[in-house]
Length: 399
Ligand SMILES: Nc1nc2c(ncn2[C@@H]2O[C@H](COP(=O)(O)OP(=O)(O)OP(=O)(O)O)[C@@H](O)[C@H]2O)c(=O)[nH]1
Ligand SMILES: [Mg+2]
Image (cartoon, rainbow, N blue to C red; front, side, top):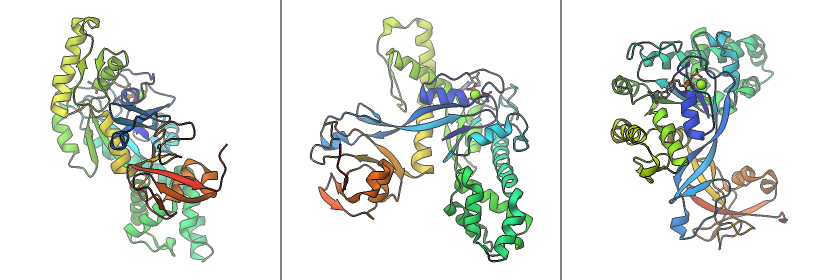
C-alpha cells in the first residue's frame, strides 16, 4: 500500500501511526526524502472466539478478540505538480509506487497547505484540487512510459504479429499492471484491441486514465480533521467518486504511543480509550487526550487511520481473511500453535491458489483442502470465503 500525496499533508504521521515505526515528521514540505517502509495491520474479528479456542498467533496479533493481520506500507516523498517530468522528487516518488497494489492518498482537508505543501492560512487551499492533481500526475507518468514504445507496439499489433494485451502487460509489468487491468481498460473505453493505431489521442488518454484507476485504486484520507476548517471539505471530498475516510493521523499517533507505554487502554480503530494509570499522566497529557476524545473520536467515531487501512484492503482491493492450519481438529500448526496465521487474499481465491500463496511447494503438491468449520473436503477450485479456516493436504511430507 503506497501512502501518497503532495508534501506536508501528514503522510509520515499516518505511516508512523499505522506502523509505530519512526519516521521524520515536520511542518514543511519534503521532510521525507527516502521512503519509509513498515508493517501496518488490518483489523478483523478473530475466529478464535467462534471456535471457542485460545489462539497463539504467529504472523499476526490478537488482542481482545481482534486479529491484526500484517500489511506492508510505504511512505514516500511528497509529490508536486510536474513530478512526472521529474520536478521535485517526482520520478523517485513515482518509482517507489510501482509495486503498490493500491494507494492511500493523504489530503490536508483543513486547506492549510498550498499546492506544493507550503503552510498557508487555514481553509485557503481547496483540497479537491489535490485529488485532481494527483490523478493527473500518475496518469501523465503512465502515459510517458507507454508513449516511449507506442509506435512500435501499435505497428506490431497492426501487422497482426502479437496481441496488444501481452505487449502492454510486458511494457507495464514493472508498474504492477496486469493483463486483466489492460483488458478491462480497453473494454471500458470501447477501443479496438486489434488496431491501436486507430486510437485517437483523446481515447489514448482515457485508456491510460482508466488503467490508472483499475491498476492503482485510490482511497482518500481526509486528514487533519481535528482542525476547524476540515469538516466542510470532508463533505465536499465525499462528493468525488472515491472512498473518503475522515482522519486525524496526529491523534492516532498520540493514542498509539500512549497505548504502547500502557498509559491508556486503546486499540487501533477503537472509538474511545480509557486512562489506565492516571497517576502516570500529568494534567497536560490528560487534557491533550481529552481534546482528542472531544475533537476527533466523538465526532468522527475513530481517528480514521485503522478505518482507512481496512477500507483499502477490504473494499478497494476486495481482500478476505483466511486462516491456514495443519490440524483441523486442534486448529493448529505442526508445533501446536492454535490459529497461528491469517492471510489476506483477494476475494475469488481458490483453495489451490491459496496453497500457492502459503508456499510454492504446497501449491505444487496440492491434493485437496479441508474446511475446519464444516469438517469436510473442498476441491481445488472451491472459492474461499472470508474467515475460512482451512488445512491444505498435499503429497509433500512435512519435516
Ligand atoms: N492538525 C493536524 N496536523 C497534522 C495531522 N497529521 C499530520 N499533521 C502535521 O502536518 C505536518 C506534516 O506532517 P508529515 O507527516 O511530516 O507530512 P508529510 O506528508 O509526510 O510531509 P512530507 O514528507 O514533507 O511530504 C506536521 O506538522 C504534522 O504534525 C493531523 O491529523 N492533524
Ligand atoms: Mg513525510
